[in-house]
Each structure stands twice: as C-alpha cells, then as structure tokens.
Length: 173
Image (tube, one colour):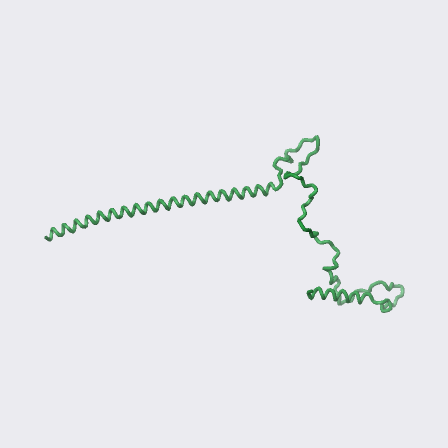
C-alpha cells in the first residue's frame, strides 16, 4: 500500500478518535447546546475529505461495463436499415425515404472511395513504370545502334588508314 493511502487511513482513524469523545470531555459553557453535535474540525485537517477516493458516493462519469453499450439499443432495427419515420395513411416524405438509408453509409462510402483511390494510384504507378521501362529499352537500343555505327565507321577509317600506309610505302619504294 502506498504512502498516500496509509496517510489517508491514519487521518480517518484519528478523526474518528477525536470526534467520538465522550460527552464529559466536550467543553461546553452553555447547557442548551446539544452534546451530540460534533465540534468544528481542528485547523490542521484539510476541509475536504482526505479519504475521498474510497468514500466518494457520486457515480462515475461512465459506469464500467464488460462491453461497450450501444445507445438506444432497444430501438435498433434487426436488419441493416435505419428506421423510417412513417405514419400510417400518410405518404413517406422524399427526404426521409428508406432508400439508401443504410447504416454506416458514410463510412462505407469512405471505404469505397479509399479503395478506388488506391486502385487508381496503382494503375497510375503501373503506367508510369511501363513508360519508364519503354524509355529505358529505347535508350538501350539506341546505344547498341550507336555502338554498331561507331564500329562500322572505325572499320572504314581503318581501311582508309591502311590504304594511306600502302600509298606511302609505294611512294618511298
């Protein structure tokens, strides 16, 4: 038990001992005052009860329960639709029709919108990925074609250089 709780118990016991003194010990100069009335609390005790947490008689803000209690559970319909305000013999108002008045309508709509957003983002990402992949393949093909063209040019240049070397050799010979 913590220090605060033991201090509260000591205060409560000391109060009961102080306030339940016999009538002969109560100082009273006037005999018209009843001896059963308790004297005012001594100044060293706080005015509020020090034992408040265990002797509090007020109800808590929410009564504890095993499971959450639904509001107006007795009025809850059995199926998934909400009640229609209908008076026999009178037509149903268009703004209070039962069509579309499904429970959790806004929540279900939000879930559907969220899933649709996820799907659209997935499609967008897939399209971007395919576009990047196509560009990468095109660049790879262009690099290969450029390499082939460079090799052809180098082969032609090599042939020209060899012909020049032969011409120089013939000129010196």
